[in-house]
Amino acid sequence: MTLSSSSYLPRIQIAPNGPEFSRVVLGLWRLADWRMSPQERVSFLKQALDLGITTIDQADIYGDYQSETLLGEALQLAPELRHQFQFVSKCGIKLISAARPAHGIQHYDTSRAHIIASAENSLRAMQIEQLDLLLIHRPDPLMNADEMADAFDSLQRSGKVRHFGVSNFTPSQFELLASRFPLVTNQVELSLLHLNPLHDGTLDLCQRLRIAPMIWSALGGGDLFRASAATDPQVVRVREVLSALSAELNLPASTIALSWILQHPSRPLVLTGSGRVAALQEAALACQHTLSREHWFRLWCASAGKGVD
Ligand SMILES: NC(=O)c1ccc[n+]([C@@H]2O[C@H](COP(=O)([O-])OP(=O)(O)OC[C@H]3O[C@@H](n4cnc5c(N)ncnc54)[C@H](OP(=O)(O)O)[C@@H]3O)[C@@H](O)[C@H]2O)c1
Image (tube, rainbow, N blue to C red; front, top):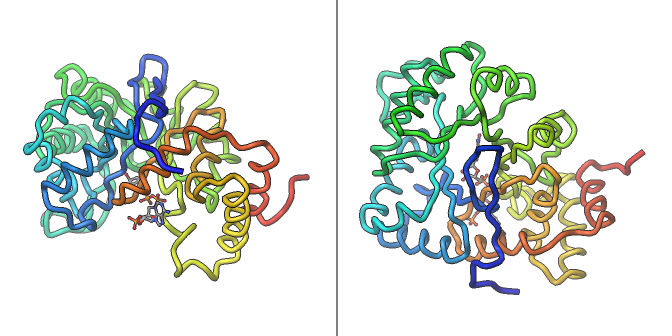
């Protein structure tokens, strides 16, 4: 089954008073690995847009601090794209990197000064004037919710960032920061190889607050398909059911794996991680299909390695 038009790929408002994003989001963590020329990056972005993928996920640290710059080069070549995408970036992790020689140890920094400096740097690197959403990349044991809210307020007032959210936060960490400033998402790992957010309260809280989670490594970081993961018992079980359903439903296995996430009532957005347009098409197709409850639970049982009680 193939796709070429964008009419089927929905956009949703991800939170009350939040931004409107496409259900499938273009993840650019691996952009530097794809070794695309600037013109190839432009073409990739245009093909994503053709599929209805209008939201881009970035972070200051992606590609050893290079990914945002690579995207910025493409946007300079095709400036009209700036107004067709929504841009998400993240801050709060400081990596050891030749690009940041001052960092002596990998650590978190959610100070007001770092949040503001990092957001401003992301804007410069991507050559855009405003971020639609800035996320705190990981919970920081030293995070001070009042100080972070003050940084968010300053960035919002200056027009540099429209909305704020978090990533990899527990429900209680989310509630702490949300008590000081409105948050529009929690970006978390969920896949057929990683079920935790279904059962640890993360998606319950999203549903209660009507906040759509953003889902990273929705295909297990590629382990659902990669040959090197083929000996893992959980991978074996999930692949077996995915391949049976793929034949039965006449859909690619990746489409089924993403549909399995998309139909959760918290209205998740799924992030892609591939540099192949065919993989983006398979992801977009996932918005078209809803699995039966029996199919959904066959996959859950394969992942969990047990039936339900
Ligand atoms: N907030 C966080 O802490 C966090 C952490 C990690 C990632 N993220 C975000 O989430 C995005 C996605 O994460 P991810 O890259 O781990 O996602 P993923 O979709 O689970 O994995 C993508 C990897 O799977 C491979 N792959 C193999 N077969 C595939 C198939 N049939 N369809 C699609 N991909 C296939 C891709 O390789 P090919 O390119 O060869 O297809 C790629 O290397 C990132 O780009 C980033 O924006 C956020």
